Amino acid sequence: MDIARGLVGHAATCYSALTFPLGMQEALVRDTAVTALLELYADEDNVEPMHELTARFAPRFAQLIHDVDEGVAVKGVGNTHSSSQASNSIMYKNHL
Image (cartoon, rainbow, N blue to C red; front, side, top):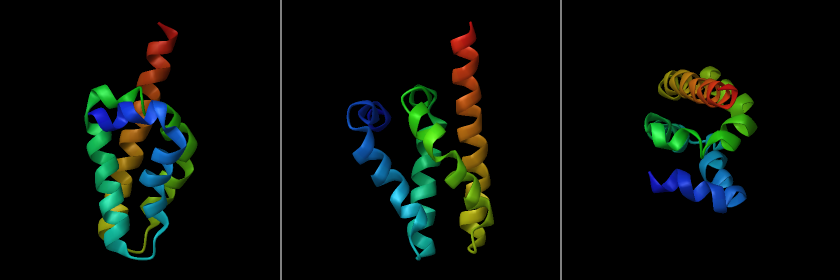
């Protein structure tokens, strides 16, 4: 996806746009944000461009599994798993 590649040039703005909604009070907003992140992580081509985002926001992603909205919490588990796999994939590639 071109969205993740755009992160490289505009990291601070994009990170805020992707992660700010995760702290919103409305569950629908958090759900939409987590869904967008899951879609980004699902595309292998996005993994490397999102490495900095993954490293920087891993603690916040992990908190999502305790969200008061069950749907957000379930997606939070998926996002934590996806972002963790992304980090591991990049570390593996860097050691080759």
